[in-house]
Image (cartoon, rainbow, N blue to C red; front, side):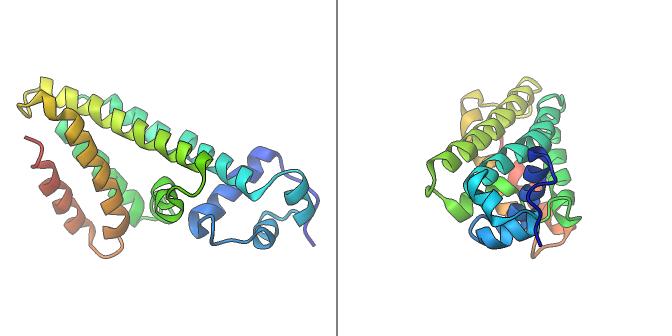
Length: 191
């Protein structure tokens, strides 16, 4: 029998984030969510909501996974080699199941598209932060002379966003070596 609530809200959000990451928002009912969180449906309905837990799970994900990862990327100094290492690290995380099912935000974009305004704001913020991080690295790459046309930085950053979505599928069907070759080939388009 589920308990009324023996966890702090932060612990509940952390556990909910794992569930949403594996099953998606639509992939779990309120009944099953309450069971997996080990709380009663009444607590879930009256104190929280599935939507509230999902939004806070997205915040938890960005604060604990993507933001530290992107902060580290922005601090690099090797330009395009930094991007290559960033994508290689992402490949390893996907293959080694550090990310249980691709990127939670990419999954959310694909699953919910424009169905919920609050969710759209979350993944728009995530994608803007990701793009801004790419721009920081691309500006360093330009200063290092790794490509010639500074006016293309924004276009290149958009291109790199697509690589994240591609990897979310390709890691399921290709080896690490094939994925690294894919990254190497994609980065040659930045010139």
